[in-house]
Image (cartoon, rainbow, N blue to C red; front, side, top):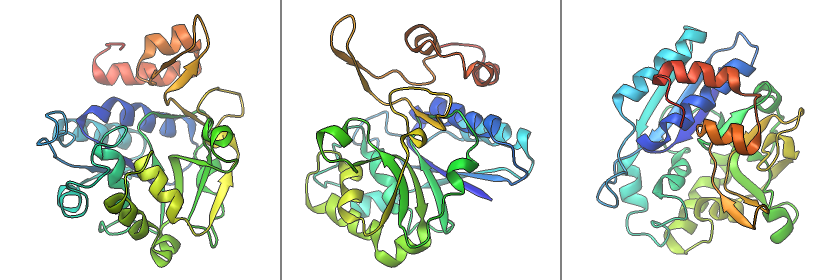
Amino acid sequence: MIDILYCGNDGVYDGVLTSALSILMRTTTEESFCFHIFTMDVSELDEKYICISEEHVRILEETVRSFNPENRVRLYDVSPYYRKAFSGCPNEGAYCSPYTLIRLFADVVKGIPDKLLYLDADIMFNRDVRLLWDTDLTDREYAAARDHYGKYLLYPNYINAGVILFNMKYSRETGLFKKARWWIKKKKLVFADQSALIRSTTRKKVLPQRFNDQKFLHRHTVVRHFSKRLFWLPYPHTDNIKQWHIDKVHSVFKYRQFDDIYERYLEIVGGVSQ
């Protein structure tokens, strides 16, 4: 079984749906998938910070099982873990949201296997997920690609944590997640969970950029990460175009490679392009 982890509130639904569709529609395998989703309700911090809805989970389950009846979606409410470990911590107002922190419970949540592919919700697969999944992680806590901007601004092997293939067995042995949680609780970090993971790493494998391409989409790109990026024209500015912003993906990026996925997505959500 191929195990995928997403994290977020109900607002990540469109991302998880399009991302999961891209995996299922770009991968040729008889092996089944389990899509794990960590969620939580911390609406005391923001009214939008609620668990992903049962209706959305039902739709996700029906969608993935339409490709293979053995595929599964498993939902975990990690609210108790968060409140115990991170409530009131220096990184609770993280650069994105508290949901960026909850993958750091992957070592203690029951039911998580020894190998796990974590994905941000703004991820689309352009090629077969097995190209990433089959990476050898012997004596490595995880494999990840360099951050597009960080590799220039910080240091050459600075990784982006939006796509991480975890060797959970080895990571539990080294205490990767436990150490990262300590950093989150004790010190304000610029990139919160990403910074905590990097500081806690014992051994990692650095992947080619095609496994987390944050700026371009090449023929060899396996993963296109729709993270915030810098545009130079018509004037220097940043924009945060996500894959479910279909009109902008077409007009700004000029991408048509995902149109078959968008067609399936729009059928599911009722045909509204965002």
